[in-house]
Length: 277
Image (cartoon, rainbow, N blue to C red; front, side):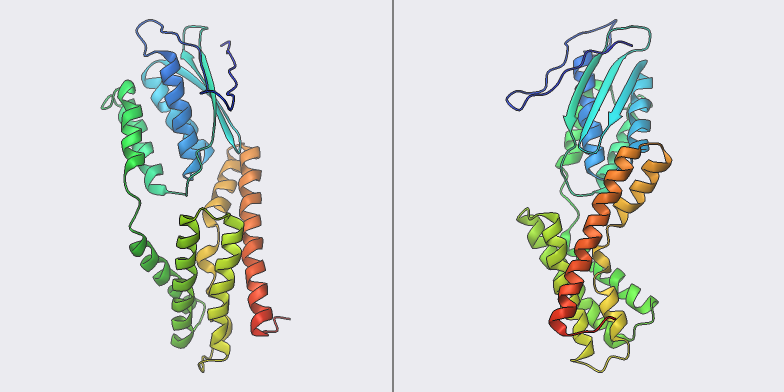
């Protein structure tokens, strides 16, 4: 399948060849939807393998062939009828957004609806926009869940109830700061350093303010809500599927964020005069 490469320029909207073949939707529009779909899914935390399966599922329903090049910051999609040489191609940057598994799930369900004929391919872009327009999860409910989870980790690792109370306070303060900094579009690395520092300061207070028997557990679990578990898991999944560039990129991003957590913890150790070695 011969492809026509189109490179987007900063001053113009990415352009792709306009063509219609044998009653199919205009390939330009199909290609644009597939590329935007892949860019959104990669941005909201989907693995490369899942994106490939979803796109090929929708393409197969319309007797189309789709090829993808998934890079850490860009997605390139080529699509065309299986029996023809003519095709369309588009490259778009990955959509910058917070990891959202609700979007991930709903967009995967959309691919099944297209594959099963319950949603026409020409209507799929509008359905995707409605999904992305849905309000995010209630931040207070999310915060409550994070607090309970972090406190549970404290108990799981042998922390007493006083230590658990300090972890609850540390998580509330750290996660609240995270929400504020996300709202102000702060750099993620700076955000992780600041949130880890604030949470660790409160967690370390268990050494001085109250007679906690396990202050070390309070300190160690006070920052667990920041651990970038999803990027670590996705990097392993991408590596097993052969997407080594994305796997390495996700792993390095997770590693940098983990280093930022360690930096915030170290600053808290110095401020609170805690000897860790």
